[in-house]
Length: 108
Image (tube, rainbow, N blue to C red):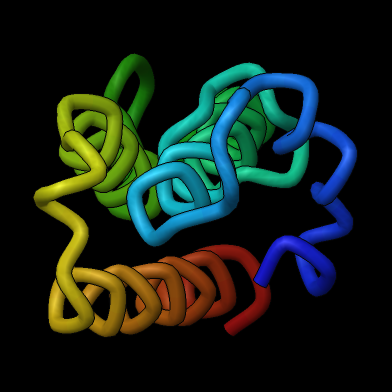
């Protein structure tokens, strides 16, 4: 996973131990400072969505903005031990749902 996430060197620098499930999840999912982590990408997506025109009225968040905020917050408070195989599958589904919400709101 570290090879796929192009994060072998980052892992070696941050963790003085051999790669394990906890350290890999921490680096590739929950690290808000790693540009290759899911949390970092969700933060960026949240910022980008905030720049899009509001749909549904002035001052109100679009459905996509609400979904990204909820997902970003849910992931930001997780610990590596919380990220089971099922939690990672659910996360993948929720990210796919974000794509669908964005497509529906702005391209559909």
